[in-house]
Length: 481
Picture (tube, rainbow, N blue to C red):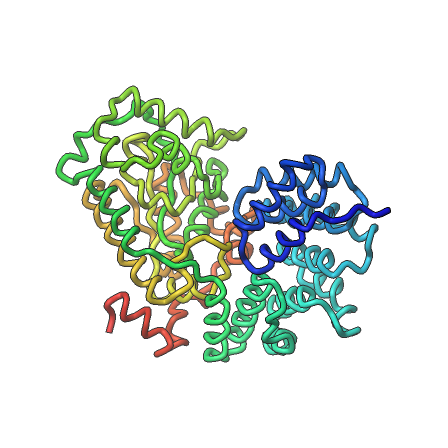
């Protein structure tokens, strides 16, 4: 007799599909508390954890679920999805193939494998995989979405838009699937030059993304950082004794050319990009918890700063021979003062971009759920940008020339000159490999993965100009006419 599914897991599936991840997590954990080896509960919780950024736990859960029941194609498919998220594409393809041996027509697995081919810059292989289902008709929406992505990559945005428009409004689909549908449709229409339609699609996608941005909380957080590091006493504040000059921190806004900058450094034989490390926020949370930074930091002495610096380095360990290591956690813009006090000789690069083009790029991007709440509304993007710039002006007053500003527009327009500036600032000699940064074969996990797989291009410069008055809310928030 088949095992009966616990009703709480059915509720968890429904909650997850409707975007209620906390409710889904609670239900899954309640089942596992009573039935520690329930493989479906493990797999569902793995899916929830993966969606909320708990990647290590999600990976362990899905492996445990497969160990308990290795005959379910969806379990192997979910493992493959997670491996793709980590950038482990080859093992992901193996996991998809195991799933397809168990269930050759599993649309979700087929779509996932096609997406992985796209991540490997192989759109033709993605099309070959899904096209039979498109021709047959009645395909799952996930098949249509990945097919549209491949068509966009292949220079056929009009066809991509037509494929997706047939599925609208898709109200019975899970929220994350609908979000993906609208953002891919927006990209297709923008590529096709249909800017009003593109903007409408982005609006729909963002209406499903909104989590409520609290500008007052943001202001208070920045006020506290500024209070912890006053300009007039910053230079005389204690520092750690870690004088390593090989640490580079890239900070800034999303979609500001930060991944491009990191890739340029990584292309150098003596440079390595470590990605978006969570080390610094984690050690600060461990050290201070809910306490205000300004209430604790000014009392720290050199020995305590040495402990924090060591804790950061312990979490950032990697087996590498490169001398320059890059942490590209953009949110560290709040903690520039912390960085300079923990690593006095660290290099800090501030990536900037025209705020209107940056704002459009954020608004047009499907971001992970429950992250960057400010990015789903044009007014919020503008207000957050103003606050972020207030923070950066403070650090500039504290550090002056000790921080390098890299303009995205300048980098694209004058690639070699700006590349030389970046390398010189990092203490690296010029190397021609940094000009051909896309040839490294490095796996990039950020939103800009497509950009760093190809030579420098100028199509994103002044992207905002195509949308005209549609961006009025952003201009108003930024204080632009």
